[in-house]
Length: 156
Image (cartoon, rainbow, N blue to C red; front, side, top):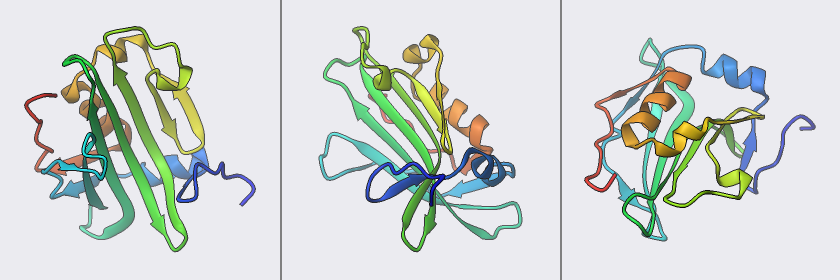
């Protein structure tokens, strides 16, 4: 598809207009409570499918990833919504926030969000956010309500 930017062998971005359409309704994530280690064991993540207002499953799911830094004040949050299809995953929305004790020089490590194929740079204030602020922004942008809310780990 010519209008999709290939992210990797597994992920592609949906067009911005389609992402807005997919996130225009209220969605619910159920059972997204336990943070599990990924293969690299440094990153914790939660995954959950999403249902719509009528209780019908959608082809959307959330992946919340957290990676603590070497210093206790450092952390990297990547909260995403993907659409599943027969050939892999399409990224619908993603919020990336790195909280670092030293100033980031790499533009891609600075806070930003993706709405389909649109990438927007976040505010410098986002770098001071903790788990609660990142989750609040993610839920506001995606209209997702978690039942129950994902538990915060002690070292967030």
